[in-house]
Image (cartoon, rainbow, N blue to C red; front, side, top):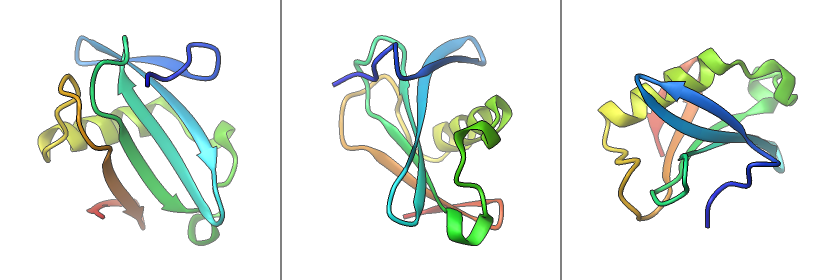
Length: 98
């Protein structure tokens, strides 16, 4: 299922358009990303907002999202290919495979 245009934002990273959304769960903040059109695997960038103090989506910048997309693409996320959600945990500003 693709991300809804109403509840997500578009971002262009290196010539490819993605859609992303921010959710706050029980102690976790997730940035969910998917290639525009919704035919590929989702990316989940997960951080503990209790550790970072960043529970609000207004504090997540497009630069944060673009950085996570670039890192994930270099580390195994194939945005155009359907499959399981690719999850990365963010801790102290560093990406860690979950």
